[in-house]
Length: 125
Image 1 (tube, rainbow, N blue to C red):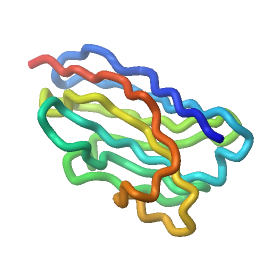
Image 2 (cartoon, rainbow, N blue to C red):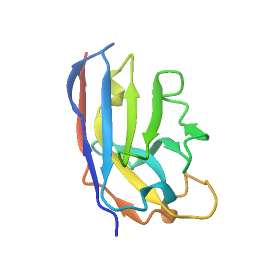
Image 3 (tube, helix red, strand yellow):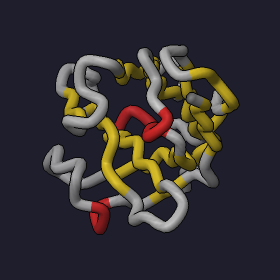
C-alpha cells in the first residue's frame, strides 16, 4: 500500500515559480513510476509530467515542456515538480499518481495504482 501526499501549491503571480512535492509512504516507492496530472475547473484531468523508477526517463506535456522539471529522491520517497514562468492557464489542482506497471507509459491513466488528494495551484494575471 502506498499513500501519496502532495504539497507546495499556492497562489502565485504570472511569471512566478512553485515547487510541488509528492511524498509517499511505504518502502517500495522506488518500484513505482510517478506522474503529475492536473485538473482545471470544468476540464478533464490532464497529464503534466512523469518520471521513471530510476529517474533517468522523464516525459512532459507540451504545455509545460521547457518550463518544468520533474525529479525524484527515492531515499526520501518524494517526487518533485518545479514549475517556472507560470501562466494563468496553469491554474488547476495538481495530483500525483504512482504506477507499478512494467513499462513506462505514463499517459495511460488506467495504469495508476495510487493517487494523491491534490494540491491547488492558482496563478494570477
